[in-house]
Structures are given as C-alpha cells and as structure tokens.
Length: 179
Image (cartoon, rainbow, N blue to C red; front, side):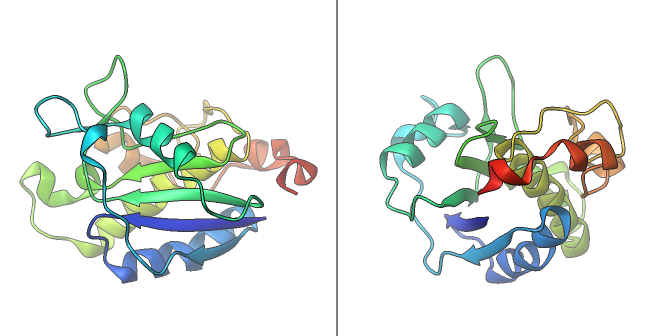
C-alpha cells in the first residue's frame, strides 16, 4: 500500500521526511511525499477564518482528487481545525477510506505558550499521522491508552500514548484490505 503525504500551507520538509521514515515502521506501508505544498482554500475555514472545518477540508480533498487511485492521501496541514461538536481536532480521517488530515497547529508546544521543541513537535505529528493512517486502514479507537489508536481529547493524552498500534490493533488490520 502507498501513502502519499500532501503538505498544505507551510510545512517544513524535514517533518515530511520524518513521517516517511517512521510511518512504514508502524504499518508496513510505502510512503511518498508530494513535492509541492498546496494552498489551504479559504472556504474550508469557519466564518471568522481562524479554524479549518475538518469535514469541509476532507470534502475538498475528495473533490480535487487528482492522485493515483491506489494511494491513500494523508494531508499534513499548517493550521488549527475543529469538527462538528468539538472545539478542536488534531486530525480526521475516513475509516477505511482514502483521505485523512493532520492539523499541526495544536501539536506545536509553542501553541500552549511553551518553548520551541522540535523533537516533541515531530513526535506529536508522528503520533497523529499514525493515528489517522490507522483509521484509513480501518482501525477504530482503542481502549489501550498506550496504543496510537487511543482517542486523544487533549495534548496530554497525545503525549501519553505511543506512535505504534498495539498488537491487538495490528492484528485487526487485514493485509487484503490494504491492497
């Protein structure tokens, strides 16, 4: 299975490289990086223009779909987002589908007033990218708090979990469904 990382907005290339090196370790996928960054369309933002509406963003990906059909598309987005009924989301993906997104603004320690910490920032992005990719591969949320598929309602919950699926989640991914 091939996963294409598509940057939206200003995403450092070293972030994409880090993901392309580590996501295969979690799921055995091939990762390719879209070489050009795409612009986040204005209509996916809320009325004040401060947060991206994650459902609208995924709808946008489906509409502009010009990537090879055999690829899963994981957008890495320089922005803050929310979904219906929430104040924010770190990411969102179609369970068993082709499209997912990670919104990196709230994963940066500086968002919370902390000092810059590239290592922590990268690890948080990896955890959320691995989580959303797990959904795209058909996984739901896991009760194991250390599993990457556990639900994170706060940045502290992101920090507590690992970046790999637990054995139970790994076993539940059917290799046939990844073809």
